[in-house]
Length: 429
Image (cartoon, rainbow, N blue to C red):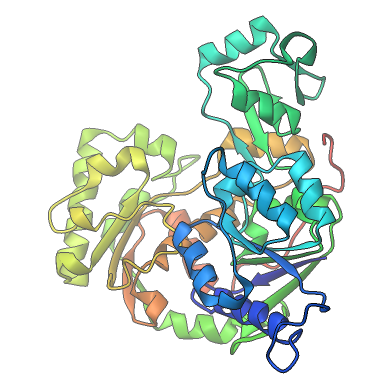
């Protein structure tokens, strides 16, 4: 069983789980002392950030969480050693991606409970290989592909291989590499790496905006949707659990509605502020948008530069930074940081879409990814880096008509974010 704790940012998901871990330990103690005959659960806490790893280790001292380190070999070797000892483990998503089939089976045998802080990207495009790398791999027949694109290492010719493509070899040997079309390599994490745990807890917000949600649904994995209300874990009941929260947020998030939004108006098939649109932006448009952002901060928000925050896609950052707000740039995919909790005036110059090739790849395998939920989830995560996470009011300029309407609909409870449909078959393992 997978338990998803789907609760808005800053609602105390990690605090709840820390308390749960410590309680499970204390309940197995006798008069407060360690009981050697108790069936203590083994925990593997997986989080995106090293500072959260340190937080777990400090908050659960009696469980002696260990973190894999590079000492006389790779971190993966140390992880293997810790699993064999039955240690409680805290580590990053990055290391969890590198788990092998063999290690996954060992984890299952040891009866670990997985606590996943934020959903893991179980399918992604591999951008580490150049075109010439792929041509060499194909020409030398290092990698063999079946009719649906699943990759395997050519053990007959390259079993003792040790060189530039070691990572490709390891991906193949663990069923993690696939090809889509002639030139796109896709990396996946086998769902068995997650479902083989004794218990699984996933802490996130808008779980159904994730690829992992769709993948588990297609595979028929049972998922119990929970949320936090006043620090207590309860069953999720449609959208009702958030109605009071969103009503309160409506009075704290002022969305700019003025002529500066004209640059993001949708016309025909255009998607203003998307990656493709930004690449086609003329110098004249760039200057006009910069001027509108500057006007917003100075004349609408009337905020000092210290309180200003803005973002756009990485490729466009250098073009849109301007006086009075340039130093307030926060990367568009920022997560889990309190560093910007003083920011009260925001400008969101992006229109988010998942990679279209990845969407097509998933679709052919019966997995539908809601692109609007994805966009909204990304934007909310960014907004929650600001003072709103502390319950303070903010103002925000979102010129993209699509993104602005998504936020408005979310605040008004007009999005069907609790609906979830998938095509009931998976064409490739």
